[in-house]
Image 1: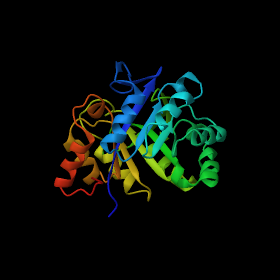
Image 2: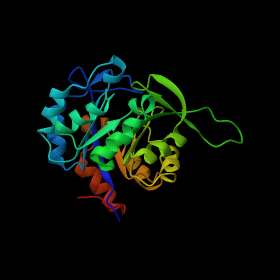
Image 3: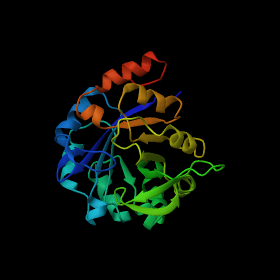
Image 4: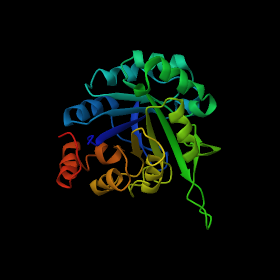
Length: 257
């Protein structure tokens, strides 16, 4: 059985790590370089770096900061934000990232997934989804809509259908971020993760809503996620990564201790 992964996430704005509720990004959460170093020491399985305003600002990702973070870690680093072209993907991988997380661009130009996967391998290409639950209609299955530009712009695209296309195009991993749950610390959207996990055969990284260790346990078990991404509970030292892994191991979840 593959070990479940614990992945802290750096949401970077104007050179600082920030947090908020549903993408508000209104609270300073520390220096991203210092946090990256701490998470590497604590035994995080991977690290994610998102330049969260690059797409909405229409600018390139802050590569100098990506390089500084990559120099601090010896674990896999995923980088996303402001990626618009195949050349952006190449640049990020050359700057020290192990994976590139593509969000808005896979809606605007889906072929970026094909080209990137064919050139660098599916293991390097992450399809990132910001999904908002649609109002429930009696007699119909739950549904989620994809939003882009940092969760600001509705697309009308059904998330469950789109994840299948991303995988068909070559995405080797999916990050599912629930806009409804993001920053609330009320728990992940278990139903969203479970629905996607049953549709595709690639690892699913659950994102949005981690507030307790039990939330992480739930999404890795009943949510069927391969990994749990979390931010606030680690940034503000509510829990450490070793503490979370010990908690999971005691409950029978396979993790790298």
